[in-house]
Image (tube, rainbow, N blue to C red; front, top):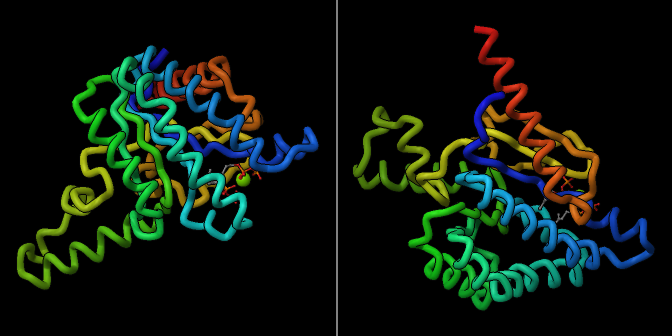
Length: 234
Ligand code: IPE
Ligand code: IPE
Ligand code: MG
């Protein structure tokens, strides 16, 4: 078997379908997704995965009904509030990835507080992609690089991948080795386009609120198998 993936990205999808199947409002699916997040964080921390990036709210998700948006925005803060002590005891370092513009200040304050409180932790790095879009991240980096070039801090011919990455939301973040999407759809949905350039993809039929450790292990085993097979092709 191949190595453990160092960086796992998850497109956590299917909360709405999970709720609908039970005749519940969509927000109940999001509420129950918190347990799946915690199960996944604990398992990744224990297994020794170095980075976990979770797609929690996309730049496109603002188009959803107002009540659902309000719930998702509030839930991100409440979750950090509820789980910060556990992140500390697990040695988890938390980072927010996404555009700050558009996120209410009282939510950003919690992202900042959790980042600061966990900054020295040396276990799993947990990236929360919130108000995140893959194209937006590349565009934001391009805009800053153009500004740097205009001020003659960099020369256009110096531009390389390292310089582009240095302007991303989290400059030191490595590429995603294993991309998991739940709820069966085979789409990227504008998630970490740069970091997924060479990722292995595991699509699970399981709806996110039902996602548990065996489903994560299945994805990791799939990754170990296929990454080893492709290495032995050379
Ligand atoms: C994913 O579940 C959670 C977010 C996008 C925040 P959905 O809410 O997209 O669930 P489905 O796709 O409607 O089932
Ligand atoms: C992707 O799920 C975004 C998140 C998981 C936050 P969506 O349900 O919003 O994406 P689409 O609509 O399938 O592209
Ligand atoms: Mg969806």
